Length: 154
Image (cartoon, rainbow, N blue to C red; front, side, top):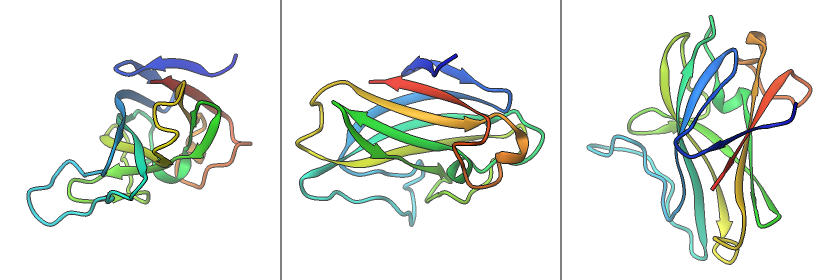
């Protein structure tokens, strides 16, 4: 069937999750949602920018999910490929190991660091692979697991 295509603002659905791509943009630094006190963030690196997708993710499965480990993301910018990092925004910090309990919703950050010379150089897309079998949503992702692919174009 091939990957499902989405745009920013659209919602994707699998049998285990629904998610909305809230934004996909280049940023100098990646901040968590709560910066009112002590917080962790990803700092600016000279000559580089983060390509960041913010996603509202709802676990509609019957067990907890670990999107930071159980899913896989990659970015492609004008034919250049970059591995994506997937983390839950847990208020003042990020983490790949944070759980999303059954029927709960979380904000997910999917990002990569790219050279500024590549930024805005051509078609930019994010591919996110999400397992479709409950037993694979709380373990490390493998491409051999049954999964749905979603392609989000900037």
